[in-house]
Length: 288
Image 1: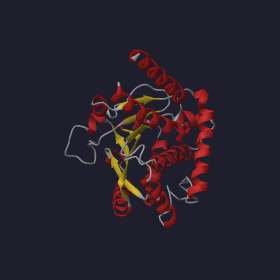
Image 2 (image 1 turned 90 degrees about the horizontal axis):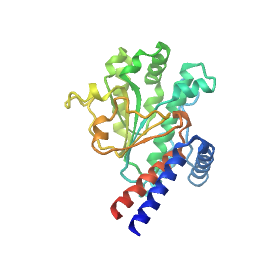
Image 3 (image 1 turned 135 degrees about the horizontal axis):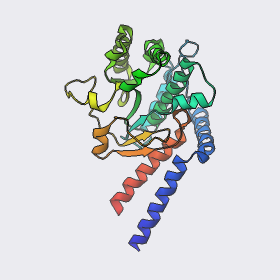
Image 4 (image 1 turned 90 degrees about the vertical axis):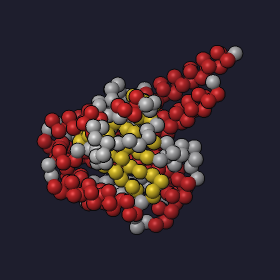
């Protein structure tokens, strides 16, 4: 009987993997996400806002001046215990492929789309009570890419938008590789500003000009060395490799999920079901 129950559990987990990973269910995830956005807006007045580099719409996450909205968000977070203290990491892969597929040629717009997805996931994880959200945004090897993409990344890092984060932000990586004094200064201001106004129970980790091989060499280098706990690592785009990221953490037991959707296709529904599956697996591991 015990073996029978174990087989049922494994079967259910495989069904969960298939639902999360397979693109044929993407429309269902989009519908579920739309319903979740609608729920947050109608019942809590919380709107998932976007950012643009031209200053036309610069509300990042939520406006620090909207005190009522902030109080609602913080109250909702405190009432969420199901995914409390979970640390989730994303390898943001597939942004360029998605842009090419949908006919985007403006490099700045491509980067905006990827950044807005990061904002969306951050706010959702914060609302779910998670402890941290981490994103592998730009690897050291990415400096070999076209100069226009690097310029678009720099444009974002120089923009005023990054100063409007209401949550604690930490940047990891060899940022001096950007060879831009304003980028380095803006990143420092970004971190300092976020440290003075944010909710200390949640942290956003962004990895720029980073890889594990180079950045794990010196434990005393707080800009490069990352040693926080990681519960789940998700890589989008269907690629089944770590790309020299979180190698030490994965070797220590971090759960890894490789999923097919490209980065802009990832929805809060995907993230919710990944969290739910991880929670279910933890419960089952204690029972079996």
